Length: 379
Ligand code: CAA
Image (cartoon, rainbow, N blue to C red; front, side, top):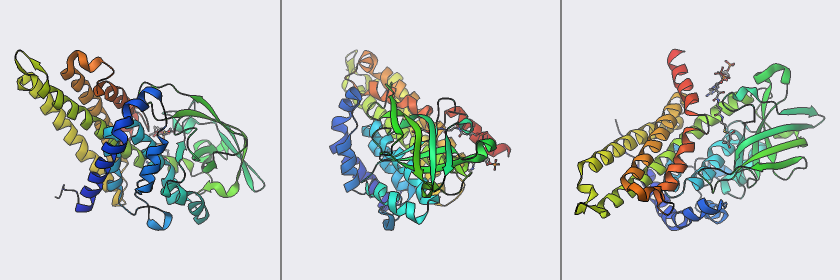
């Protein structure tokens, strides 16, 4: 078995690390404080071909594999988890359904500018009454001549208000329930499409999270992705890929927490010696590294399974569940090693701890991941 990254993948990881250190790390604390969207960073990521990393060059992508893209999410998130999820929601959740199920017309019109980073994407499935029970949505898309008319409200939408292109799920045939759910590409500037409430979050504060409100919003019939009634499968398969992105985001956060803990343990002197000489600290560091490496193997395995074209729902679920819980735990231990300093805002671990929590929740709570994993065992 070969667990090594290829030379190209190592180079991509290294480039992403250098980019993040130079461009993302210096502003991460400010983004957390102000909640500002880092437009200038996303522009630079586009210049480096990051925004369409796993898509073919003919659609403006970099033609890399999914694992390479996951390495970029990890390295960006190691510096700033907000920028990591802005990028991951764009690449995994918005671009993918157009690439996989969209018509050639949709690909040319939307996928190309998304991959080139000229436009930013978002994915809108969740509704106030349909979170974990994603099949319970009530947004509708009524066919009318050569259009669909959208009505309803989406919530908790990453990149809401800053995205140009939204993947929106709505019922074309409400009587059919989830089998009447369809997927659409929606332009941000259409009449009848408004951005609702902006959420004031515990972490990932540089990432915008909003409601989307559709009031008789008319979209062209040609903006249907795939076929009517196929929306739930499109959403679930897209989320499989997104969950590997969340796992990678968790890896980045956890690695940053471990880096900070090691640095602090070597510098902090108590009882006349650096606390790194104490076994209590050494054991915590050893367990942090072990959990992180296990999470990394699961995450890279899930990305590799996607690259091989396999059904990878179970691998994605395990990676997202394990990596996010490892990150939550590792960040907690990093704070513990910092003692009182870890609880203070100008120490990075305080932000990392808040940022890590969301990875156990979004793109399917970890309880949903347990349903997915056990479902695949019991089928
Ligand atoms: N790939 C393809 N098809 C899939 C699938 C997958 N991964 N998962 C399910 N399906 C299909 C099933 O095969 C089934 O098809 P048939 O009816 O033809 O047999 C159909 O979908 C229904 O499947 P289930 O019966 O398993 O569905 P369920 O209603 O019991 O729900 C669930 C399962 C796992 C709980 C699912 O609802 C789920 O994942 N919920 C969480 C949703 C989620 O992750 N939401 C976050 C969205 S992120 C967002 O909107 C905001 C943002 O900015 C990112």
